[in-house]
Length: 341
Image 1 (cartoon, one colour):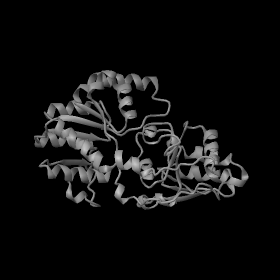
Image 2 (image 1 turned 120 degrees about the horizontal axis):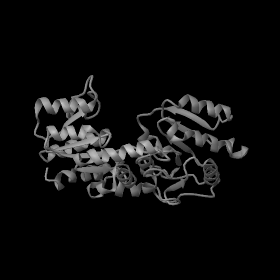
Image 3 (image 1 turned 90 degrees about the horizontal axis):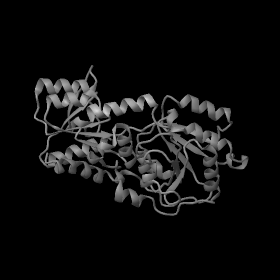
């Protein structure tokens, strides 16, 4: 989201709109020094922002929240302190099998009490918008909108040729259980010995589940198949080195790594969760399988590795047309124009 924050701020300033940003901490990398940032310090961001509103009484026209829980007392408190329109952007994935009954009821109650204080709900995929309605009530449909995430296409190196037989694979993911990489390890363990002797999967990322994943690799004697590369800041320069990206995730909102991989002309093999199917057309720019279905993933890996299945199109074109950062910025900027901010 860094590039979005930087470029959205620039777009607004070019049109005479000043933005105050409220973050947990001050950051000095990239273009953050150009932003007007208010650091939360010892408070959480929500309480820090409310304190700022109460003490300074700024005349904001619009307040936009990102990565903030929806339909909580926080939004009613904002309305008591400000006349600004409130736009809440939802980036949050949902559990594979949904919330517990208790949590579903709790969200419905919150929707009844606090949704009225939010003027517009923005989901980063159609899936997200549908989940907002399921969570807080279908009466909110008239004030929901989808704005897809976008990527900086120009900074992503492009693969020119794709290996049809014996392709190379990467995973680019935070290493936590919900990302389903344990399913990928199990799926590889079911491949024939001939394929296991040759297939190579590089895993980029770090996280709390790394040790468990590495142990699973060793338990299945797959040390030659998987290589854990750690976190890399320059994945935009790495995707193009591979033929396919693997993302066996159990929960997703709308994946930037999928978009970046497609922009590098690297098809994606992923699950049918979240907004994945809004970016991946099965058999055209990647393959979709049911989350946690390791046997289906094993079959896909075998077919792709042996060349029985292949993706021929340039996957970058879809991203350039529909999921670029400039389009994302323009769509968000139009929210301000449409509401006459």
